[in-house]
Image (cartoon, rainbow, N blue to C red; front, side, top):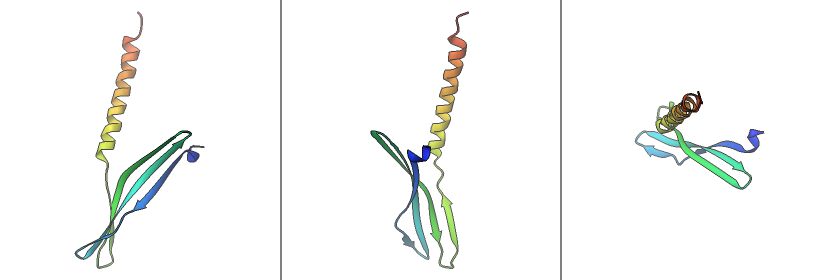
Length: 91
């Protein structure tokens, strides 16, 4: 059911030749389509590095800002729940 409304796609960017290495960035797009509303969230996912000796390295990009936002949202929800439980009661 959720698959019908949300999808994740990878996009590979243009390769760049840097010295002896070839660097290719890639990103991830999460697409949410609801009736009357369409949201696209693009974010960098990583970089693929191919060296001249044939070795490859996949360097993921950690989204520290997203982790901090989720942590702040969780802290706010926990604080709101705590305030609702302790301050909203009539004793």
